[in-house]
Amino acid sequence: MHCIVKRGNFLIRFIWTYFVTFFYLLTLKSKLTDDFFANATYGTRIGEKAVAAAGYRVKVIGLENLPGENGILYVANHQSFFDIFASLFIIKRQLGFIAKKQLKNFFYVGHYVEKLGGVLIDRDDIRSQVEVLTLLTKNVKAGYNAFIFPEGTRSPDGTLSEFKGGSFKIALKSKCKIVPITFFNNYEVVKNRGDKVIKVKIDPAISYPDYEKMNTAELSQFIQGKIQRNLDHGFDEKVAKSI
Image (cartoon, rainbow, N blue to C red; front, side, top):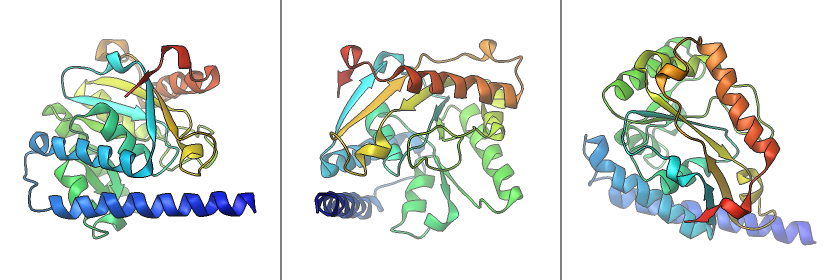
């Protein structure tokens, strides 16, 4: 019975969060322009609406590590559908995500992804994957931010899967800073397990001279290693800040 109640609570929160968030998205459609930076404020509000609707709190370690400039590649592990909302809420900057093309006409999600500087990808089409990486590289070179989940899919239990090296071509070709981000418990939070506190760690930015001699596979392993060590070490509540 307890499991049934918990599952029911999860479904109610899930439906309510999506209802509130997508209703807000519909009100934004006419306000978005072709200026990614101008639209960033709305991206932040989307994150805020989602966090508030879900009733979550957010604790962050390393908030001071967020760069003051743009043209950054943010790299994170992927644990739940809520990772994107949490990222928009925490970083509060223009973020270009990669979304599957099937979302293009789903409540205009594809429209918003593109208006924030993101791109839609056909995972079954190699050419589409190449075009996506090329476009994001171009955007980062132009001073926009990109956000990638190199695992390529969500982890149902928080276990870190092997990173796909190809996505790190964005960094090597644009020579940008890389900011590793670790989600500790989103897979539990969205399933209504434990408390409703999203726990995140932001590592210091890694500058191009620190990785310029690496190839994509080496850079992928390097960043994956940082995130894995964070997961192994655990979330230190003593140094975390509530936001």
